[in-house]
Length: 379
Image 1: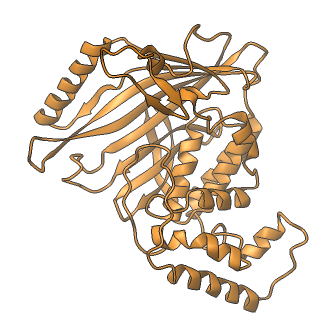
Image 2: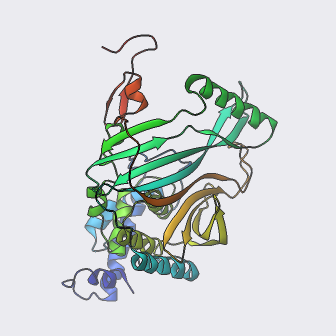
Image 3: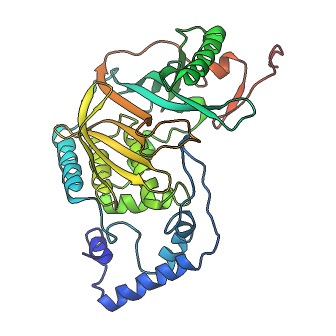
């Protein structure tokens, strides 16, 4: 199956192309990529993740891809360069089918979909003037309340990031000192309470708003090509960044079943995706781990899926090789998020759109806050 055969599944008016036409199109595409020189397209990153520039069809090659796609008759990278390992693809397609069969919980007026998440991230500190890096993991437990009418107020209860795992005496000392400073300032049980229509927290448009999710294609081939174009210039490779984008979207926890199914099928078309663990345990829940290793930095992105229901249990990034600069031992899950969803009748009262920044008297717009110096009142 070639890329135009896939396109005809979406558009019936695309004519049959000969192998000669396809060969010329591909040659033109890669000619554009190879002639791109050092052009790099940079986009804002969604969140802090460890990423380094790669080679081959990586950041530089991907930067020229948009031009190549416009000039040639090739629709995009999806579908014609191979895909996931057959076993992984089978699991992803089964999860997509289960997502549709199990559908989504139906919320009555006034009810909420509560998404409980446990998120672990790495923290790294340089010791004095030396080159030694000390790292540890922190965990944050959050609650997100998504209303039945998603245009109404969403509520987000954010916990503090407290030490979760350390790696030796020095790592424990740094983690304990950091936590003690947080407790001294805010208290061990402090939580941030936010409330905003459509989940526009911190005065920033919610990338998982109803409008944003509704606008995403449900055809997995078209969806994956859109993901490639959205993430172009980011990460170490187009394929690696596409899987990261899918993981970031799924871990939101309130993705509609039809979109969840399309994302699983899109992941099945990404080269290098494979089953990484048959019985993966994440925060007490067990599922199948589907992932892809980024050779440049040795980090593997995994999705943990319950194949029976099609629900995402969570996602993780695993450092497969030792890295003295990172301060993490090989095999460490340097970040992971586990989610659980339930239907509830109410959400916590109170909260503001900008949470703690409003408490501090900051002026917040489009996710950027300007706060008055300590001890100076905000006018």
